[in-house]
Length: 102
Image 1: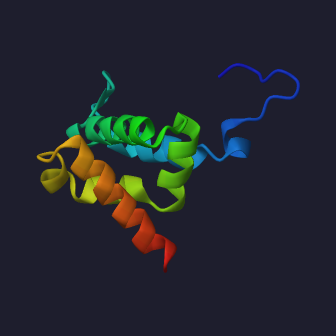
Image 2: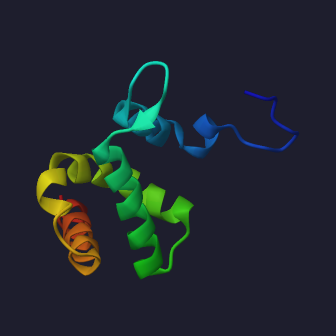
C-alpha cells in the first residue's frame, strides 16, 4: 500500500475497512483471488441499486454498511439471484426501511 498524500484519509478513516473486510470474506481461493458467486452478486446489487437511486458508489456503500445489506444479500443469495433488478432494488429498500425502525 502506498503512502497517503498530505490531506488524504486512509480507508479506515473513511469508514471503508468494514466493506473491505466484507469483500475479503467473499473472496475464495488461495493463489488466485476470485469472487464467490455471492460476492459477484453483491457487486451486481450495489451497481443496480446505485443506478436506480441515482447515488454514488460511496453513498450506496454507506447505506449497505449502516444497515448491513451486504449480510442480507449474502444470506438470501439463493432466492434473490433468481429475481429481476426492480425486485432486488425494492427488496433492499424494504430491508433498509425495516432496519431503520429498529
